Image 1 (tube, rainbow, N blue to C red):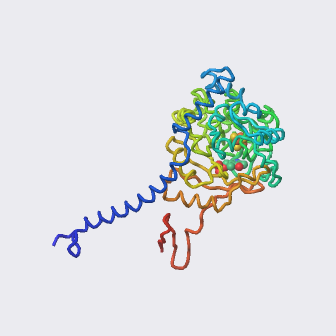
Image 2: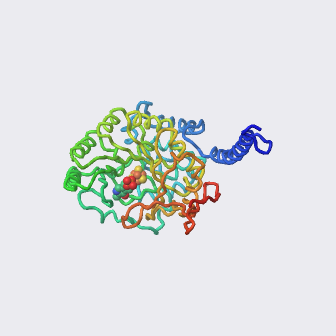
Image 3: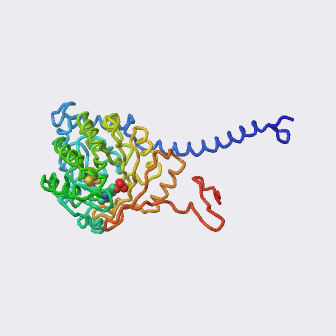
Length: 416
Ligand SMILES: *Cc1c(COP(=O)(O)O)cnc(C)c1O
Ligand code: SF4
């Protein structure tokens, strides 16, 4: 009797049969996921392209501008939409919407690049682009704190925030291309855009020079890439001359809000100082051909780009939306980094999500998608005590017989 037979059955045949059954079982799970994921709006669809072209053409016509203007980041900044009457030139607002935006914007200003504005789906009452950029009457809700992180108490010099042993932040500007309504630094937006003074930059760099424990410096804001290249180079150059500074990281949302800021000249500068980039895409519909053009310029120059997403109610607090968004990021070479649990900032209560929901989303991602596109879910603890990873815990039990794990499909396995 040949060796590969057992009870008269061919073992190879049997294994093949079992494998096919398992493969079919996995297909069922994948098909269910694909069905839900296909409902998530992506920036690369024909639908998104039509929305974009439609609003873009209206704006170009209204401002008597050209395609070349549109692709120029300075034109985009100069022509930000920051007044409710400008919005209503391109969108049909109800009287109530109009009044609410007007009322809120008198207290908390807003600004939206024409580019970002053109991604809005005006027929979707919870369009993720609109929710992130339009003032909302719920911002008047009083609960929450202005500075729960006590950033103002972790500021040893200049514009530094230090909460960790070997890394710190320098805030180089309070300006951003678009003021995210969920921003944790809402209190710093103020009424006008202000780059940090040279004196404060120099004082921050001096502090780093005198502090040999610092190996990584995060240059952020606001949006660090709103500084002109010569000012960025001034900072990078000074930092690179400090022996103990090994890494410079830049925080920017321009990839999502002003992708035209990214060009070869900037990429060469970032490459020269081996800068790492952290950015923020919160929804797959922000990953547009324009955004990917910008990502490609950076990654083709060898610059590492990682994404810090914020979990936001009605914008992306859905497991398929988070899955799709991270898969899109992976596809276009942006490495998912963090999924931030939103902080309890005054005026952002309507974006709050329960932690149990975030944990469910993380549990869903396990096994269902590439490990390469799974962010770490974190909560930035109050009082500036640092980020805490939030991990679904119920999958490990420990007793005298060893460990018991729960797999992604909720099967139990033991390890001695
Ligand atoms: C988030 C943060 C950092 C960077 O932390 P990573 O986990 O390395 O991204 C550094 N300093 C402060 C104050 C921070 O809040
Ligand atoms: S880009 Fe960042 S700093 Fe600027 S408003 Fe948005 S979340 Fe805040």
